[in-house]
Amino acid sequence: MCDVTSEPYGLWDADNHFYEVRDCFSRHIESKYKDVAIQARMHPDGNEYWHCGDKVLTFCNVKFDKTEAPGSFKEILNNPELGGFDDARDESSMLPAFHDQQARLELMDSQNVEGTILFPSMANGIEQDLLDNPEVLYANLRSYNRWVEEDWGFGSNGRIFGTGCLSLADADLAVEELDRLLKAGVKVVYLRPAPGGGAQPCSIADPKFDPFWARLEEAKVPVGFHVSAGFFDASTVWGEKPRPGTRDTSALQFAMFHVEIPIMTTLAAMVLHNLFGRFPGLRVISVEHGCGWVPYLLKTLNKAAWWGRFGDWPGGTLPDRPSEMFKRNVYVVPFHEDNTPELVKRIGANRVLMGSDYPHAEGLAQPAEFAEGLTDLDPGCVHRIMRDNLRELLMN
Image 1 (tube, helix red, strand yellow):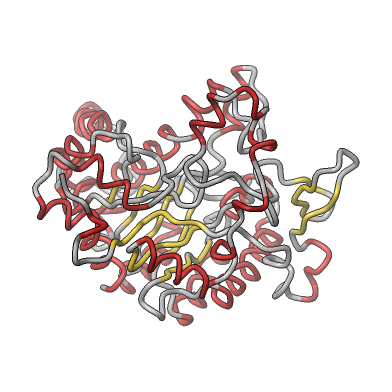
Image 2 (tube, rainbow, N blue to C red):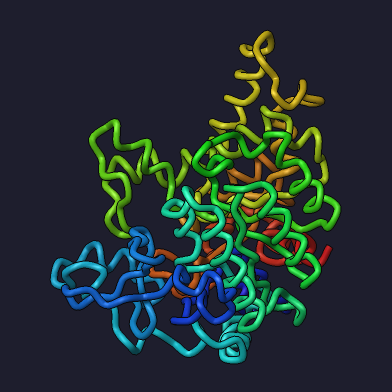
């Protein structure tokens, strides 16, 4: 067994989070959009909810002063005395390191984490509620990204890599903000695994987005597709609610509309619509979707390309087997409980990243615990997964 806490190398974690502060959207909002800056408001039920103007953002939790303890998800679900996630939150679990960069660096030192990607805890859930107004969506994203840069940084210290949050709801606005982020030194950006085009959905591999992808390829900046508000609107034809909260998704929504299906569909479109053929240097990361779906998707991509060979190829015919294109362009962060050695057999150790989801309840109490699922791999593979792969990806 490899005990990474005693290894002479620091860990590189592809899935860490901060918790947002009250003014994360309003601090840098342009004056003309002040009235639609996303902010928390108190409701008659005594709880705060995120608002954009008069619209309630249903997927996003408000967590300023209290949260669940890292790694406590299973205990919460299995302990009826806790009464659910709201009752499991307490002030002692909201460490200063979840809001403050210097405190986070000190915590990382104690965890033997040398570098990490910091994803949002709530901002990755705003897009679904604002697709009908990309202008307002991007006004808030621009302000939010400036807050991330100011409070957390984009990796200039070589340790904390805050993500630039983007959306393909509007191609021109996406390119404009990406250009600004690249000038600011961003090293990784976030996208929701979903169609582009906003209120008029289309494939994110549509050629109208090529200028966006070309910039990322040239800059060698990877895209992190983190689990987010999934395809919940599509679940309504099965009798489900269209906009559940983070902790209110039904069993059917979780199984078919939230985690695996959105990332599978997104990556399948990128492969079969030949985005990776047009931009072979593009790198994307699947984060917090697990890896159980990977063998099925690799097989299905190859089969579908053969069956559909006489159909339309919107991005042109593929230059290689779809499964090989996937393995060249896609990195996968498995769940800690997944069969990571099997994933290594499928896509190679150099495309697997460790991710702890720290400090979320459904993640690990300590990032180093991820190595417990790697005991059947040789030390070289473990080193790549726990350190080298992400470090090389972010440090170019």
